[in-house]
Each structure stands twice: as structure tokens, then as C-alpha cells.
Image (cartoon, rainbow, N blue to C red; front, side):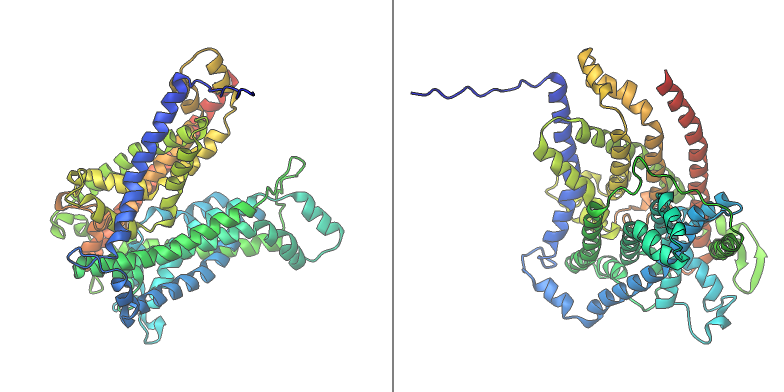
Length: 562
């Protein structure tokens, strides 16, 4: 008779129990701020206005209504055209920054990043001044108008360019000089080298940039709202169904339709990234561009042209914000910055945005970094850690309008004990953190993976509590990345429109939302002025970040040498 061997159980230490409890708490938090709101949105699509279950009736109604279905086709059309325009321009611009010797390279790179600091409605407002009914260059349109498809495309090119450029700069920066030397020795033409070496090496960056641009255009609300005219898209349809008609069930349906292409693009991007392999091996020689007159002149002129277009749109917005009465009285005035004359909240909407952005930066950075640390450093507990990773990646695939709509259905439910948060500053902070959670999580995870595991091993051998190691070792080493996440949260909180358009109360209205409302009232100059204030604030914070980054980098390097 054989005796079964006793099962060996490893007793968990206090640190292990603490880490697992932290992961469980993080999973609950992410379910509350991401998972359950999206579930509420999905469920609402199967109910009528009275909350009764109607199955697929709302979806059948949507797809059988030509006007609503055409909005989906319009969104796809605009997104596809913008992607075909933005990605080649961004590729050439990124190629110039990484493979050519440009004078004032830092300036060209800085100018290209300016649109990130602006709410999406700013380029739409600037285009109204340039090509609108009373625009300076309206005659250039040959009798046409800027409102509609053309205006949305031009504004989206301005808005999406830096997002694609940053991805492509990263992709093109990783190149092995030996491949180009071999091509030169073999006498390959420049065209052939481009298609056999450069493009294959950057193909994953091109695919990612294309998917990012497509998703941004599909889900953006501000540009289509300002300059879309009668050209309806999915994002504006959601707004009209919820705000205009109070038809929350149909708004949920449109939101799910809007979620589909964004989720598909995200899934494709994740699949592509799994296929990607390292381009720089240990033996690789980094490619350092050498001066070449003809090439450098061409790319300098190209970057100058693109930068001039960006500065023209931004400059037009700044100038328009100071005009007394466009286009009849071009006298400069500060009157448009007296926001109390155009909106009941006045400058309070700006201070609300500052408060919300600071809150999102503090709460978001704390949650994303601590959450990434718990996910990466916890031993075992695989099922819950995988759930946390899924919930951490989910916001990347969810448009802001969709998440905001989900927050209405979840947090405003009478049977939800958290409904006291609705219409408060707290709900705006929570929504913003949830909306931009993924990038913060990825940034923190990347920084944590660069830390040698020996730190934790030595601390454990010395019986040092893991939370003390976290505070004294992990946080100081990762401080530059923590600051990156904080600035990312702050800037996006200042500029976001779509994710908060449904959630504000009269006393918590944000500057970006106030700009939309002021523009709706026909006061374009004041709306533009408010956008300019947001740009200046965001750019100022980013400038301080760059200065702090240099200081912290030196401190971290000195700390590591000790």
C-alpha cells in the first residue's frame, strides 16, 4: 500500500501577503473606474428609455437609420484620409530628425510637439479665422467652404501629427549602421536601401503610428464639433443623442459602435508589437547621420514648411484671440480674455482645470506607478495580476466619449453607493486618470524593468520591509519616469474635452468644456483665447519638466554611483 507524498506548501511572508493585498485592491479600483462603467454602457444599449430590456432593438434601429449609419461611414472616411496624409508627413519629419543633419534640430522637434499642448478644438477655431465665412484666405477655396470634411481633415492633420511623429522618431532612431555600410559596399541605390533596409526596420512604427492616428481621428470630438458643419461623425452623434435628445440608450449604442474600431486598432497594434524583434543587438553599431548638403537642404526645407504650417495655425489662433471684432475691427484688445463676459464661470473654469490637472497628476501618478510596481514585483498570484494588466491596457482602446458615457450610467445609478461622486471634481479626476491610465502604466513598467532585481533580493536578505525598499530605492531611481507620468497626466487633463464633456457640473466646468460652450454661443475669439491659455499653461509645465528632468537625471546618476 503506497502512501501519497505530503503536499509541500510554501508559507507566504508578510511582504508577500502585503503585495497580494495591494494587487487585489488595485484590481478592485480598476474594476470600479474602468471595467464596471464600460459594462454599464454595454448594458444600457440593450434597454429602452425607461430602462426596460429590449434586446438588439436599439442596434437594429441604429443600423436601419440612414443618417446615423452615414455618420459611421463619414468617420471611417475621415480617419482613413487623415491617416494617409499624416503618416507620410510624420515619417519624413521623423526621418529628417533622426537621419539628417539639421540646423536647429531641437527647434523643429519642439515646434512639432506644440499641438499636444492644445485642446483639439483649437485648430478648428484657427481654420475658421483662416478659411471661414469671413476668413482671410476664403478666396483660396474657390467658392467652397472649410466647414465639413475638408476642415476636419486639415485640423486633424495638425492635431495628430505629433503623435505619429513621436512613434516614428523612436522607430527610426534604432538602426544598425552596419546594414547601411553593407548596402553601400554592394552598390545599392538609395531607393533600394530605403525599401529593403529603412522601411522594413521601421515598419512596426509605421503600423503603430497609422493605428494611433486612425483611432485619434475616429474618436475625437472637439474638431468635428467646431468645424464639422453638417458633416456628422460618430463622436458628434454621441453628443447629440445624449445632450441634445437625452436618448441615453441610443447614445450607448453609438458609443459601442465608436468603441469597435478603436478596440480593433488596439488589438492589431498589440499583435504587431508581439511580432516585433529587437533591431539593435549587442554587436550593432548605432547609425550616426553625416552631413550631406543636398539631403540636409531638402529635409531642412521640408521641416521648415511643416513647422511653418503648425506655427501659422497656432499664430492665427493667438492673433484671433486678441481681435476686437473679426473681421470688421482688427484692433488688438484684452477683452476676449475677460471670460466672465462670455461664460458664467469666467476664469473659474480655468482654475477648475488647474485643480483637476493637479489632482489627476498626483492621483494618476501615484496609482499608475504603485500599480505597476505591485503588478511587476508580486510573486505568483498570476490570475489576479493578469486581470490587472488587462484592465490597465483597456483604457487605451476606449475613446474618451465612450468612457465618459459609461461613467454617467455607472456612477449616476441610484443603487450605486458611489453615486455621491457624480457631478463633483472627484469624478473628473477619476475619469481623467482612468482615460490616460495605460500610458502611465506602461511608462512606469518600463522604468521598473530597468531596475536590477538584486535590490529586492538584498533587501529581503537583510529583512528590510519591501515598502521601505520601495520608498528608499525604487522611487528615487524611477523619479524621472514618475515625473514624466505626472506631466503627461497634467497636460492631458488640461486639454481633454471628450472624456469630461458629460460629467461636469455648473461649478466644476473645465476650461476645455467652457471653450466648447463659448464657441457654441458664437463667440469664437473668447473660445480661442481660452484655448491659448491652455496651450501656454501646458507648454509652461512641459518646459519646467524639461528643466527638472535634467536636474533629476544628474541626481539619480549620482545616487547610483554611491
